[in-house]
Image (cartoon, rainbow, N blue to C red):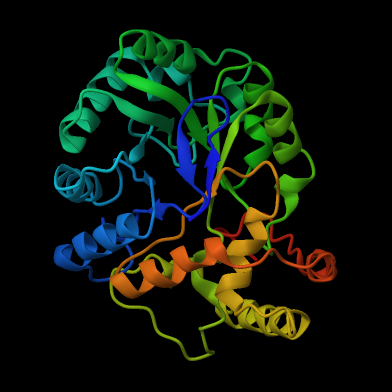
Length: 324
């Protein structure tokens, strides 16, 4: 396993880290014993950073992680996320930050995160979403700064709103965040235009999520693929979205022939090729997924000719979750 720095936080992360959404739920049935085994295997293989959230099974993911880390001697950093208080997701331009991320709410939620993770200090606390409307007065980060000074959190970050990832660029330039969690993959290449370069300039750590485009970029889906009950991808790939994704992935497969990498290996290695990226956090629901994902770290870099070919596969879908 190779390691990188998470910006200026002083936190060293494994470049392949553990995405813990699926072990909390929303990806179909998940057995806690399998989740525990996957976490242990990932740590055995060198994973030293885990990303979770309050919303991943209403704390279920956090509790499973806490259980495993109590059984390990390795130093493993954990990032979690606090969602905004009740209201539209993502927050609308008309939402007031005082209603969604008030100091009282943030303190109460973070105390819950500390309890669920069974720790005195959170390595990285991220706000789970944002709206550009708050950029002129980003007071929630002033509140988080107080919590840093109080020793409740070591570093603070933000997870980009899916529909407007560039909304966080001003926050990076203003020094409000230590890290940003961003959607970046072969289809979603827009962050390479400005967000990633700004992160480099400002020393902000970059955590990449959705490297597999919720599974399509593994190349394993077929046109009549069915997702299990309770799997959020039933909505993500609704209508003809899955069929269109498969067609595009098949085109990518042709372009990576001769690279020496499988489709999922290429998808993970692709995002790690950008120098701004600190780590990528694919989901690992079982031991086998942990083994396959972690092995990518030690594979050779992608040859320039294949990286250049990927530019033709950027897919501007707008806001994927509503409409085409």
